[in-house]
Structures are given as C-alpha cells and as structure tokens.
Amino acid sequence: MIPNPYASPKSDSTDVHASSPSRRLAQRCLRLALLILLAPAIYNFICFSYFIARGPDELRIQNGHAWITWANGCGFCLTAVAIWSLGLPLLELLTVVIHRIFGRAASVDAWKEALYQALSRAPLFSVLGAVLWTLWVAAIYQLGVGFYAVSVPIGVAAHLLAAGLYVPLFLRWYTLEHSKA
Image (cartoon, rainbow, N blue to C red):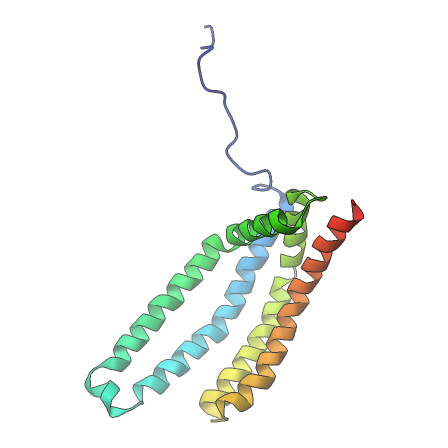
C-alpha cells in the first residue's frame, strides 16, 4: 500500500519534559507537599467552621454560618483539586513567562530543569510549613492569642521558609543566564 502524500505529518503533541524523570519527580513532590499541607488546612477549616458556628446570633438565625462553611469548603476542595491537577503546569507556564521577560542566554528547558530541582525539596519545606500553620491555628483558636501577636512572628517565619524554596531557584536561573553570557 502506498502512503498518502497529502496526509498530515505525525507529530508528538506532548512537551519535551512531559515524560522526563525530573518532571515526574517534581510532580510527585508537589503533590506530596500538597498532601502534607492538607492536614493543617483541614484543621484550620474545622477550627474556623466551629468558630463561625458559635458566632453572633445574627449568623445563627439566618443560617449564615452554614453558608460560610459551605462556601469555604467548596473553595477549599476546588483549590486542592486545582493544585493537584494544574499546579506543575501553571508553575511551568510561569517559568516560561519569566524566561521570556528575563532569560536570553539559557534555554527554557534549562530553566524548567531548575524548577524541577527546586520542587524536589518541596515536601521537606511543606512539613516545616505544616508545623508553622498548625502552631498558628492552635494559637488563634485554642489558646486565644491575639491575631497579630501570632500572625506576625509566624508569618515572618513562614515567609522566610518559603524564601528558602524560591530564592535558590531564582539564583539558579540567574547563574544559568550569566554562565552562558
């Protein structure tokens, strides 16, 4: 049988990195980090819902606490599903956008590899983040410590912890750009 010369060429529609081992590892690490952070998120949701349920009479009379709990629960579930399924593709898209703005010497693939390496450390950072989040929720809801008295020191620690994940990534991107120049 003679092949049709007018047939469209076969092309692989998947990305170069779609099946790379480093991308698969990054996907697993990002999902593991999400699962680790779900525990304090659920704890926060339960404490907040209980707090709202014992709130002012106006909320209880108009069944407002049920609507607030329902809306928070739906938002919580949608966010978790979105991060699970779209987390890595969105981070890859953000990497491409940042590369188009700042990157010239290194390839997008090199930048994505740096992203994957940074994400491989996400589970460790999420364990520490979960501890901070749990401390914050316990201090606010169980111990009754003032919001700002708890949020400022724990917020600073949480932001420094997050910086430990993204600053090395930015430095790696910077060195990729300047090592080729």
